[in-house]
Length: 78
Image 1 (cartoon, one colour):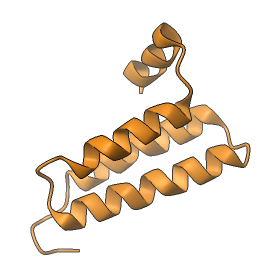
Image 2: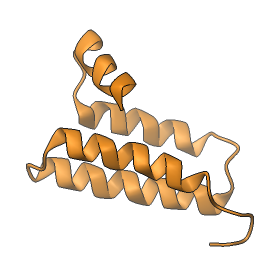
Image 3: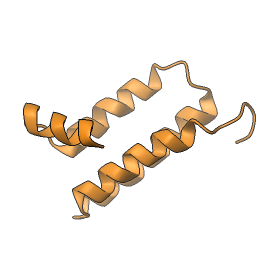
Image 4: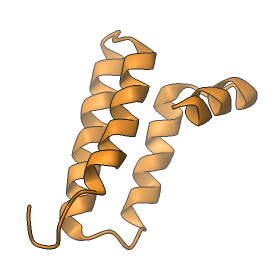
């Protein structure tokens, strides 16, 4: 979470810009299709909440949580 916040401040990026770049990155990873679908869905939810005025720090925490959660996926479980 700290890395994302520091990146935002150092590069003057909006959280929305980071999410859009992460979306592109998720698509080209070697993750399973289930993992990609899960992450893209979570990224879309976070982007929606940000667009409707949600707290950025909470959404960054949700973003980090999505990547932590996807690590626990077992092949064929979702």
